[in-house]
Amino acid sequence: MIRFDFEKSVGYWIFSTGHMLSRAMNEELSSHGITYRQWEVLAWLSYHGEITQSELAEQMRIEAPTLVGVIDRMERDGWITRETDPCDRRKKIIRATDKVQPVWEQMVNCALAVRARAIVGIPEEDLEVMRRTLSAMRDNMGENVLGPVPTNTLVAPTGPVKVGSETARVD
Image (cartoon, rainbow, N blue to C red; front, side, top):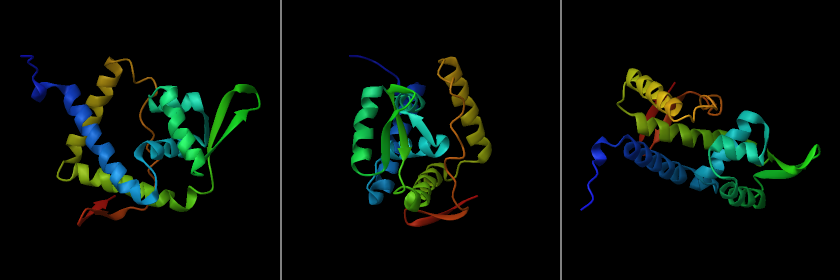
């Protein structure tokens, strides 16, 4: 029998928690006709304004071929445009369309609701320790070259956010 102590596996805890967060985001965003991965594209576009397809794949830490399918669907559904870079015809520039703006705040509220649900009952000091620990792990793995995840991508009014059947406060 193969033995592995999942309880002590940091990777297991990180991946399983990440999977649960992704699933919760997919559920929250489904009413907007968008997936978590597509929302992630829009979040990076919110941060950068526009970005090449290869830079976006690097920022999202996914392989370029994986991103192509996401971008194809988003372009088909009118969320983004993809244009050839006039300075380098090999590059494609991705931009959000006007379709995003009217629903962006609602999508951000979906993310805030998932975050609020995930951190209920966890003291801020513990969350800060977690952030520092995960950042150190990224440094150790040589993957923190992009720096911290942008904090200005989740801009929405503060106050109560619906979390399941309860209301949580986001300040």
